[in-house]
Length: 224
Image (tube, rainbow, N blue to C red; front, side):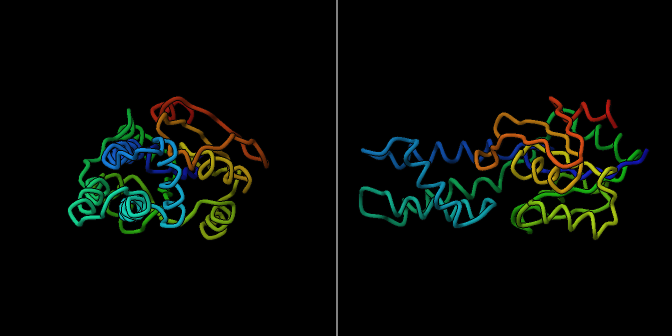
């Protein structure tokens, strides 16, 4: 039976958060705070990120705001420029697909209806999709500010999808799995070792949908 597969992008199709983690590590070393531990500095950065929002551009602003709050010396423009560079270099990373993604998308697109569903900054996400070359596999690319229960319900309504024939595939319990199940969809959870910690949450089977957990994106071809 032909299914509707809603597929996440960052850390499901390609690496993403690991580059942010590298930038945060470099930032904490550059700050070199005399009293706060790396964990405590990270907590201040987390607070800034919650206010600034998603994406590399907002992350850069979060780094700068955190530096202004925590710097233990006069704030010089060259230091701010270095801090901005930690974030801006995220735009320069080539897309690195996860194992088996391209051939699996090719296989799935011939058998099912694929929709790319990702959240974040609209322009940044659209640019990633264009650079990746995967748009040809998808009937539609949807970028949303948040993935919550209402988001999934709206997609079902607007696309006239039957919940029992619709699956959300992704790495985030908070955004991909739990709200999709709560909205009555099925879900495929593919954990990633570097999922952003804001997306961590216990997987809570709920609603009427099925839950499938796989070790890799490649395994989808065995089930769909």
